[in-house]
Length: 396
Image 1 (cartoon, rainbow, N blue to C red):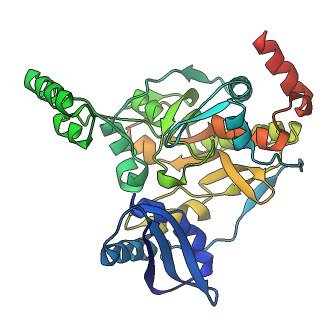
Image 2 (cartoon, rainbow, N blue to C red):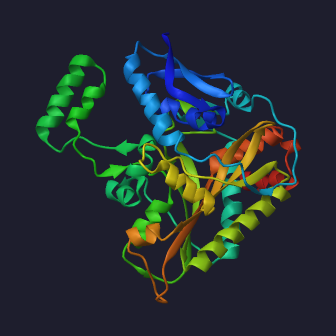
């Protein structure tokens, strides 16, 4: 496989390395692997392994654009942890490999993993526990949303301008007899489905949802509301390029989402109550975790640095992170405050004539189960007694 050294326009402080690493695979699908060449505490080159030969000048321009536009404009923040769990655990080695070898999990395709027990029971259990917390704290309404989401909804949510690299689109053949006949003939001749299939597709009305809360704002568009909390669970989709691995970064995963709507003080209070209750549950299960100020993965925006700076300075986003190894964590949940972005874009009004604000919390259920098993292992005898009892009860 071809290897290349791509020079950076100027040396970049090593502190920016993590931000560069988060973006390199999104530069091109040709990139199979990369390494940052560091000397004197600065990054001078990006070493690439590619699938095919590449135009070095083009790749140099692309990588330097990402570094200049999305990375160097950022301020480097020291991590700000707002909560630490009391649990300190040993970690299971090579858990995902164990799941594969035992036939519990199967890598169905890129970014897609199918799995059986005990992961199914654990996912259902953790979801029930989150819903129980939500319904005990608020008079929450629960909804089941369809998988597809209208493209115009993602547009109103700002997804196209902020996260184009993660977008996943659904389409269909143009409704015309000649289209069906031409495709069928081509397929009979080639006996293969190739990218040429897209020439028969003209529908761009729907996408795969990257999260559940967008459905909620669409559902409430233009309405005058009492303060309220809405929760939903569903499949979500984010393209993770070659960053996908194990159950940590799936393209196709399950989210339990909680949306808060109302006056500013109400939304912030709801978010804090849920954070506190979640931390209590994590401590009860003696899991090794922490919560820190975070930001969304904005990409290719002219104001990426401004958006990240605002999120971190105003603490609009917190992430609950759990350890899967002694020196590695994954985000299993986030707690977000949107100010008036969604209420303005979806024309949401407060019945008490106050300004309408929104917030949400989301939990990645596959990640949550994976982190739990990385800390407790597959032997049920090592699990907390409450988890053993409740999974046994549901399986009977």
